[in-house]
Length: 251
Image (cartoon, rainbow, N blue to C red):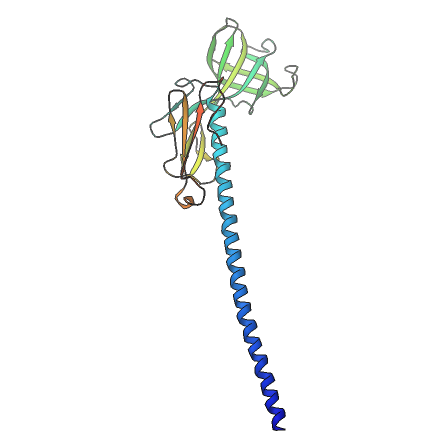
């Protein structure tokens, strides 16, 4: 009986040792798995931060180039001393397609980024004498019967003031606004309105617009919390002002 109890104790002790070994190995494995998951999580987060910044830079480049290249410095846009780009942004074009239905109200076929907005948009009116004159848009309403529309056009009736007495032929519509980097985001303000964010808050306080002889430079600085995660701290985009030249330096 004594031998039997002694053997049972040895078997119990061996089982306890195995349990301890399993527990140690399980702990080591769990630690390795946690470390691996933590590393993967950081890599995924870093990749997402880089992707977000690339998309933000692309938004800056596309927005600024679209509105800068059709305009002339000093007349259509300027860079202020605090790095803000103020501009008269081209938003669309309209062809006159008939005589006025009433004094000063013309049928037009419209093509552009958006529909005209009276009392906010401004016009350049090409008269029959070949001259362009500035005017203020005072009225717009869609009317399918106003013109025969071509592909991509919307028809309506437009009214403006201040373009002289020559019969109009063509209209170019502009919107006054400004691009800036404020509170970490790239923003656009329409007229004197609030600055609306176009990107997440990914940019540092050194981000700004700078004017050069033949280009506008957009300096983009990474936000402090992203330094070391997204590569270069600073990146410049150079937008060529010659309409015939391709843009350079974009993402």
